[in-house]
Length: 257
Image 1 (cartoon, one colour):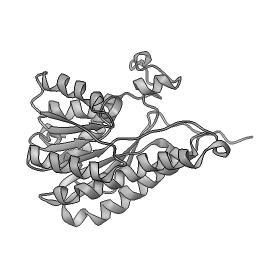
Image 2: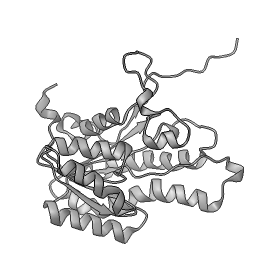
Image 3: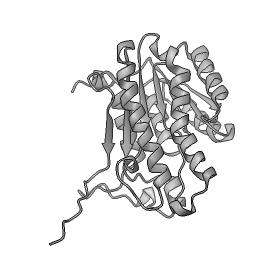
Image 4: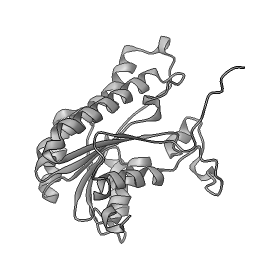
């Protein structure tokens, strides 16, 4: 594959939920390519340090930090408008903002259900709908972050899996609807990714991953950012409406004898 096909410099992007983890790594990857990128979080203080660090580095792309809760449509509209005003347009939208907590379905409150659906699914709708005119002005790319939980059931994650399954369906439908406008819509469904956030819920520390082994069952944020970078580049020009599962070594359930 030609390296030039993976080059997306000169573009502008918006990455939601970019204060840490996958979103931050995607922003760093884009900036390193020369992509001017807006990053957002629900608190300005969470994205300012990220922007300062990237802008003070040798990365050719600029970072614009904005406080925005993706559940708030008016705030999303303002974020998109400011991005277009600052950078002259919008070519790539990465819907990464999300939230999760583990809870047995019988104990799940209505508020808990609505919160997870609102952030993970309605937030994607808000951002896509607010950015539609900017993306269609010259063509662009949308990458929605889903989860392996959208495809496989897991204990205590019914609400999260349902919301992410909605993201999968939206991605496929929108991929079809916007194809004629030269906007490609795709998604990435990561398996278990070691992030600082994962450690807080008792999962594996990123520093414990051993990439010298073939048994790859835990991913890194860089590995997800690489797939997002590919989907945002001309190298993926024939991929539309797809959800790419990035989970490492597949697992199989053995049939009983």
